[in-house]
Length: 137
Figure (cartoon, helix red, strand yellow):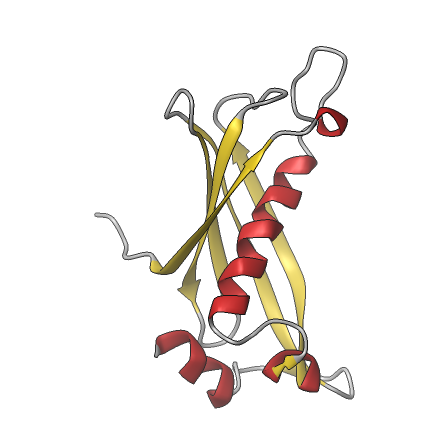
């Protein structure tokens, strides 16, 4: 059963030379950078980017990250990085998928979990209603 991708947002990029090794394969750590590009676009689209509600009243911090690689990305590949919300009650769970646009193959899938802190740096055990409203609207 496929779960709905709440507010799926995508960005496209071309793998730059500085992200690859001598074999022109993307170093595994850069996949998280591509995830973050999609996450930033998703949060910005919901009014949750730094300087909006987040930054003014709350902080979002990554407490968990995961990436499962399916196929290698290489120098010059065009990639679609997609992000969507999977959970939002106690933490924000954002799921990702990287797709190689030339081959149509999935390159990676993953997620990050973000906890909400108040401006004093205290962990909030539930996502504040102001943030939830921006996610579900």
